[in-house]
Amino acid sequence: MQRNKFKAMTFRFLFLLLFFSLNTAFAQLKTIVGKTEYPFWINVPETEKTEKQPVLIFLHGKSLSGTDINRVKRYGVLRAMGKGRKIPAIVVAPQLAKGSWNPDKVLELLEYVQKNYNTDLSRVYVCGMSLGSYGTLHFAGKHADKITAAVAICGGGNVNDGCKLATIPLWIQHGDKDFIVRMSESKKVVDAIKKCNPDADVTFTVIPGGNHGNVERLFHEDALYDWLFKQKKTQTENDF
Image (cartoon, rainbow, N blue to C red; front, side, top):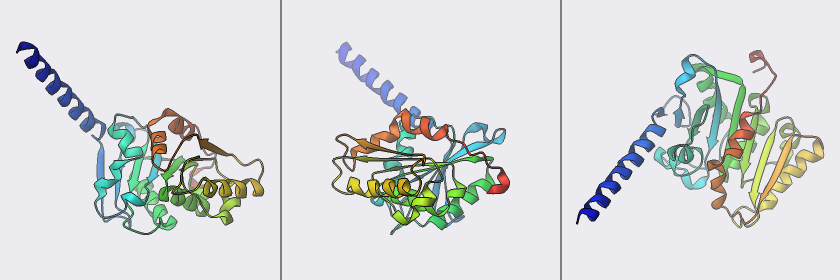
């Protein structure tokens, strides 16, 4: 009887510990609605008032589209944060109601954040998965001068943007078992970039055994963030 009681108390303690850990992870997370075309989650580091912060934008895939913004927490950067990952940046995660990501609306969101928060204009990063990967490369292709680097996972892009994409560091990743969006979609963008500039700073990584869903684990690993945050523009604020 005592052993069962001890187990029950231990379970309650662990449950409460997990509950408070998750709430702490999202302590600075809030939604902003009505200020830009896309409603979005934003997480601002406590040091934002005294130190300029990098900006990391996460674009979700089709399955998270809609009008319930809580869906955006289901995978990607926000899910990783919910599990305790600390990200040293202002994290912005908009929600798309339907259709495809519009690069000009993503730019509107970025400019709102830069106007209202203490941001480092030389460190602006974008990442996305699936439809969000297409959105990432579309945004980077149209507004390459606004961002520092981008990561695109299990998506694709417009080959006509190859020369613009060649101007920024890119890490494109795709699973070799993805039957929803074929790996060839990413490969043809990489080929277009390399055709324009063989020395372009683009890395193409094939994830062995990766399908369209399990590559989400990349958002929970250090490599993605380590690579992004070591990239930095040399441009001045006036160049933006």
